[in-house]
Image 1 (spheres, one colour):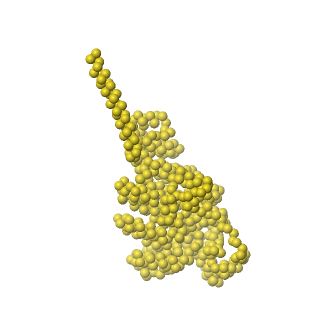
Image 2: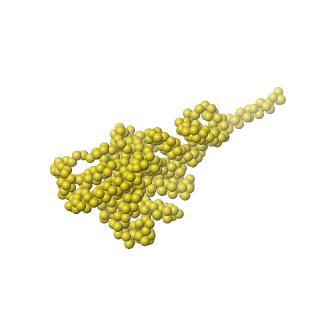
Image 3: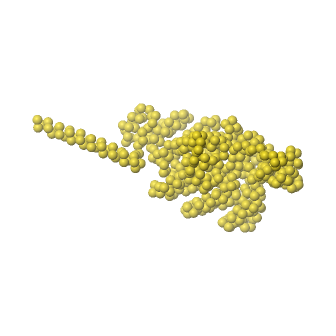
Length: 512
């Protein structure tokens, strides 16, 4: 009997120890979850073999991930892309807290795979997949990871916002359509979403927070700091996600490498510069579509963003200062082109005070700002733009010339008015000839549309020329007389998302 007693006691002791270990493990698991230390997340919708090997061979998740990476590489080499989205989901779930994995997979879908398709709708699906991977999944597992915020902001700033992809205008149109659903096809009203009072507003708030993972309160804070921004354009969202990343970094300073913050700061002032260049949606009543116009209202905010970045990042101050100086040159040039001479002169004086020893004309080291009158500088920049292939700058120059043409027409300077229009036409024809093979990417709107838009704004009873000048222009152009003031003007077309069946958004600036 005693021969069996010892094994029985040992067996009972083992059972007790296993039970105690189980209780301790459950307590440890709860503490890990509470402290955010759980590093292993279950795979969803994975095939049984992968799910089994992941659970049974938890320590070998790296090997499984490597096998999936090789599978993905083979498929991409063979131009077989449709399985790759699922593979990307599994790979990121196997390595959920490795930020580079999320960045690599999102970049691959948005940049490498998307351009393999000729159809713009197919490209857009892959770009969306890259954004959703970062926004919906990457930030869920890594809410304090600066690199993921920066990459998400970069997708909006560069992939959607820039014009390097032939489908960029399609991306902007699709994004405007999606944002139109959030803002009820009208000018964005953040207060309406912060405090919704109707079922419709509550549904749109749910769409904003659940699908797009955005906080309307933070949006309003960003808009007040950096705006007014156009939330139907990608630049505003680039600024939002960069600002969200900086906010997380401030809340968790011990988990952030300070050297990484410069990437987020750049993803604020760079999209702000883009928003200044073309960050406003305007209605084109002639072709029933929306066009991109400069947002001159945020010049002071863009300037403040550059100055704040220089103050926060002494290590990279010189690089930021170079970008700041270029922005100031653009501000003077744009304001001059839109006949806002007083503001142009004011910002030129600001440029002189801050960068007195830097030339203002490219290729001329002797052109110190104090020695070059601001009007001479603006005209010189116009000559440079004639030689460039930047549609945004050229359209700005063209509209400035057309505005001057109509202004001189009202002043009975008919010959000068004709000269401005002739110059605009020559610049337009020369630019179009140079960009013949790239019209889809950097082409201009038809010249007649540019002229009509400039004329419409010149004749605007509220924001255009005085009534007497408008009457002279109407008479000279053979237009009907303006309705009397007692007659209420026709309401302007609502600025909303781009209709699904409308032509793509174009980069035509609106006159100020």
